[in-house]
Image (tube, rainbow, N blue to C red; front, side, top):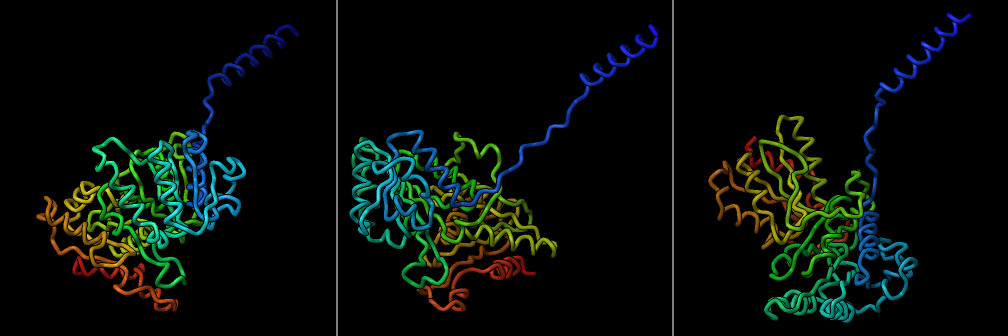
Length: 360
């Protein structure tokens, strides 16, 4: 009996000892699926909470939760003083926002679409962009102009323009064009914290698209630096440089071309001004070929600027073929769907341009 008890106790001790030595498998944190719309909402919510000087104003941003529901829930949480519905007068509320920024607040001015920002372009350019320079650095204008930009679906000529080149032309502005949910959150938070006026170009067709967001990007301290591009796909045959919705087109085209043995490097610009020329040059020096892809018009566009910068810099001597641009067609946007589809870049256009550039 005593020996049986000793045996039982010894076995128990061994079991406990083994349990203590055992290393449990720890699973990595699972990335969460977040839409671009919700990522933008999170960014504004976190910055409104972090800094009481931040406020949002624009048409239908408060009680209606935003025309595209980007500001959903913010009015109920922060009230009338922080989330402000405005009349339909872009020149008026953009001017109020710029004045508030000059007085020390940090406004987020939403345009229901950037096509309507043309009503307020004097405030954006002459009041916001130039004041820091004209005051010899004494007066900053920390403001974000944000809203959907570029072609949507079935909204014709007056609601389909891409303003990346328009605003990217102007000194004094920073111009941001996110693609993914992570881009949207990290760049919007950086834009709100920046002491310069930032034009933040979203895309209506991307609002409902879900992306995986890492644990790091879900942190309230997460930001992405303005002015830094991201290589979304590594490749060594040709470089595709693009921004906003057309990052998806380029990645899809790259997947098709990979099956034919062509490896594309896809660069997501993220920022139009300042342009991350260094990242583009580094890639071109590796691949020796370049295609630019954008939804805007070709003349004086983002792709045209990239072509000029490559020609003027050290990467030009590494090119084995002329740079090719894929752009929107040089016409006002038609309303009919078949004409609209033929007026903006498609995946097949990217594939065709890559093969043309590589002469295959």
